[in-house]
Image 1 (cartoon, rainbow, N blue to C red):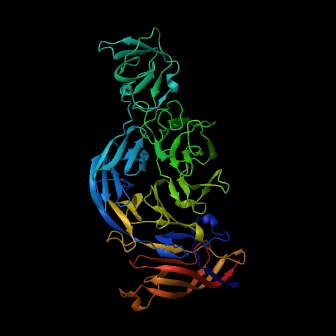
Image 2 (cartoon, one colour):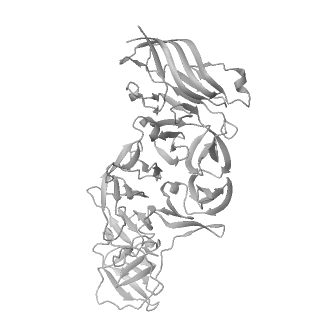
Image 3 (cartoon, rainbow, N blue to C red):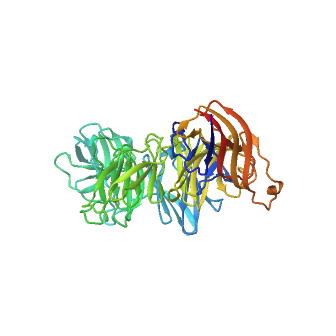
Length: 571
């Protein structure tokens, strides 16, 4: 039997998975619940929650920066949108999206305008004009001369071999009957546009799978034979709408659609509703399609130092500066892949793009190498895979340097990160209920929480010691198994556990409440600063279990700088 003194004065790695318990050089914990790792490496009880409003049902929240002085939270529920400013609801309107649809709603903001896309719905535009919010359809620019729409047009695979015979229609010279040589049309074809005979046609009526009525705002000459060279609008009710969206180099970028999942459409420079490719001038619209041996389905697009394209199979980038139709340098850099079943918005963290991998078990950091030419997808949760399970929502608070990942089980995994100080620590947040969604606004972190059958909009407040002034919450930090002199201990006799504290008013170690001086409980006191001890804690035969656990549920502050354990062990 040998003596040991095991001291841990940094918890910079947070909670780590059991398979890393015997690794050297890890400043981690076997459990870290409702406690954060500070920039110093110390651990402290998390902030409490304040209530903003009770909601009508389950919801998703989004940050909306209206101006430099007006930051809002958008709350999307089943068929409704509410906007909160200064924690008060200032606008409500109907939306076309059910709560189930919200998993695939994506959005991008430029100045005071936000555009929402969903593969099954026409894009919507949220903006504030003359102090009034409005939500309206996204309208592609029209040409004043002939009222044609500046849409992108495509030749879809299922249109191969389809020929259109044009015949006169009783409604007049601007109408025609389009008859195909095989079943092709559907009722959803109504409202979509075709390009043939050097003109755009609008389908106005569905007759049968082989016949529709089309309208043209021009004079046309009846062709003598069927037309085989024709194109459909890239976006329509039949073909679907853009799946992802961003702004890049003053272009509006759409990524993927239901019928063309690998397509990337970029508007004209400075004309975000004009997708006419024109004659290929530098400021004309651009279309590219990802080509590889695997079927590429674009999950989202991100504007960073380059235009990043995240697909189900990997991570691509277009690096041209400036980006023009004749210079599109696009290549795949990594092969991680993103989630396709739900949209989890990539987060910008210290110049990198952080996203959830396709397997739902990794949080990856997309960053350029030292040369600045190739991207790497570093794993941010390599030591804590057990905490990343079925992510539901994600957000980053740059003020507190915290990444929040809501899970489908209602728990929230939280990464406290400070690369300059070597902090990369995961923990878990729990509350009396389930976390549903998360967003950050004006330095605050807002959450949707379901408590029993009610749903609330809440936010973390540094001055709150309980959740919504009603619920205490448990906090816990447990050490790693003992490894001393290069050996894994098989039997441990714990003689004393010591903890160094600052600004602390409550602490229990291994189910023993530690008394603190009475004066620290005065309202004017910041808490106790110093060391506390507990002696003669017994023998551990299951040495995988932690030697110490600091815990409690009092609505009082606690910050632990270090923990040391004294005792004997055998190998």
